[in-house]
Length: 282
Ligand code: AMP
Image (cartoon, rainbow, N blue to C red; front, side):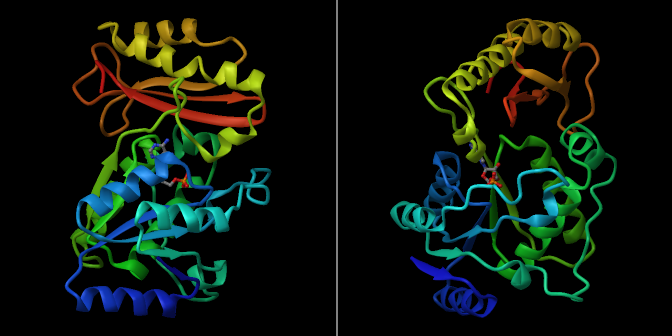
C-alpha cells in the first residue's frame, strides 16, 4: 500500500496503474475508518480495481459550531486498515492540495434537495460535500466510486451531480456503486462519531434501527409508518426528522412506491445519528 500525501505522488501512482491497464476504484472517506468504510474497499477490490482510498476531513462540509476540529483523526490506524484490506493507495492530502487558493474550482449546486433533511439541519453541508467530491473525482479520475447507503441523501446528490457533469462533458463516465449499511451486532449503523457515545447513550442509539425495521415492514401508509417508528424509538433520542421519501428524496404521502426509504436523524447526547432502511425490507 502506498501512502500519497501530495497530488504529484497520487498522479504518479495513478499513471503507473493505468499503464498496467488497471481500472481505478475510488473510496472517499473522512478517515477514522471502520467496517463500513472497509466494506467499500473490499467491494472495489472484488471488482478488480486498483483501489484509491482518500482520507480527508473536508472543512467545507462542516458548519459553524460543528465538530470539524474534534472530528477523529487516526491516520496511522487508517493506513494499517487500508493495507490489511488490500487498498492500493491511501491518499491523505492537505486542505491546500485539495483546495488551492484561487483555483476557481467547480462548485456544483445541490439545488433544493441540498436544503432538506440533512441540508436543513446543516446549511451549506451538501455544497461542501459536492465541491470536495467533484474535486476528488477530478484528481483521481476513477472508473467507479464507492459510497455507503447510510448517507442516502448524499448518494442521491452525488448520483445527480455525476450524471449532470457527464452530460455537460466535464467528466468521463464513472459508475456510482452504493453498498449496504454496515451495522454493529445490535443493528446500530457504524459511524466514526459512534465512538463518542457513552454506554447509556449507546443504549438509546440502539433503539433506532429496530424501530425503523419494524415500521418499514408494517405494510402501512407513510404517515402510519412514521408514527410506528416514533413510538418504538427511545424518547431520549431527540428526533430531528423521520420521514418516508422516494428515490428522488421527495416526501411520500400515502402508499410508498418501490424504492422508498424510511430516513431518520436523531441526536443522542452530543452526537447526531442518521440512518435509513428500505420500505418493505432490504
Ligand atoms: P465518511 O468517512 O463518514 O465521510 O464516510 C465515507 C464513506 O463511507 C461514505 O460513502 C459513507 O456513506 C460510507 N459509510 C460510512 N459509514 C458506513 C456504514 N456504516 N456502512 C456503509 N458505508 C458507510
